[in-house]
Length: 422
Image (cartoon, rainbow, N blue to C red; front, side, top):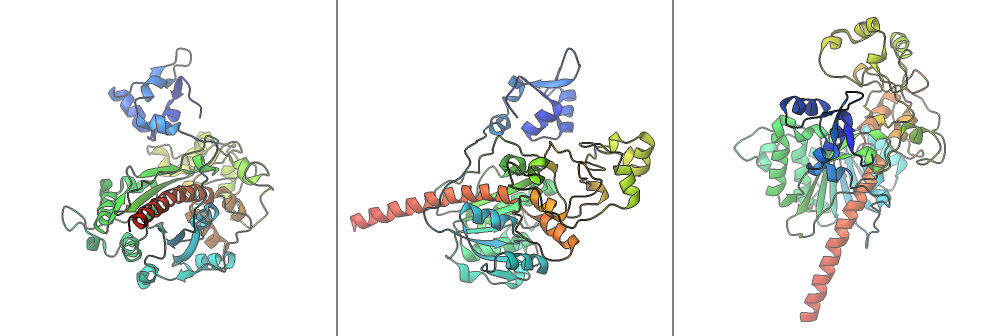
């Protein structure tokens, strides 16, 4: 998006990282009054109204040359909750070395082993693994732990209070291994989970075990990192307290890629998407989705079909824009889910009335075509849908390397000065 004099409600919501309903409420309450365009009577926000928000400046701080930085030495990663390897491939492409990966799902483990036979895949429940052997052996610990509520034992959540949650296991590994930096990734909803107390608890636990969380905790939008998908991931970064160097999140790109870029030969891939297996819609759903145009959804259906298809949901609030949704070629895909044909989150192909195939799913997540997935078709969809997009992971990898380079140069400088005074 380019800087201009006025913005629609949906554009302003994206820039300020707010729900459009929030802006409409602010408008009604007089907190941020929209301006009516004289001809169309549409509500818009003027540039000077939005410039007062720090999110405005951050939104337009885009780059075109990339976040690339070369590591000045080999830096190593231990990855937890590794899944099918989206984060691991991205970090590898950035230049980080994979020391070991832990994953409980046997099919995801098979995927990792088949594609990277040299990777040390530690299969099984994280609770049953001792990671102390990696102490001082890895520079980074990463992990996409699930979002779980904590039980509060007091005003400040302690490390032991989180027992039984997978974040506790993540923190336990960080405490055992003592990496220079740890990276946790999660859904955007973690920001407000349990009224923000869950994230607050995670921050207090990391503080207790000797790590400072980088503030503010960022939600990165995949579309700003060469991913043709409107996926958002919360990235929680914590630096060991004896390290004074600062970590900086990767800068976003100005160019936005579309579904066409994902599936056709062009800017992202050097050939069309390979043919592969995929799910199908039941006949009654196919008849409905046949009526939806590209970039359309349930509201584009005839009213009687809307009511029949949506049932009780028709009378509830909210846009429910993922239902009966057909993606357009010239837009990024909506966030992929683990099941491509479920009613709440349809992602229909632009030209054919069907869900995206396995390889199309993988392309939208920016997996390389040569990366194969183990298990049944449904298990493959689940692995891909749960993954961190590879291109987003690569840019995060560059930001980690930039941080580790600074740490290494600082240590070299200190050691050199100590040698001179010895």
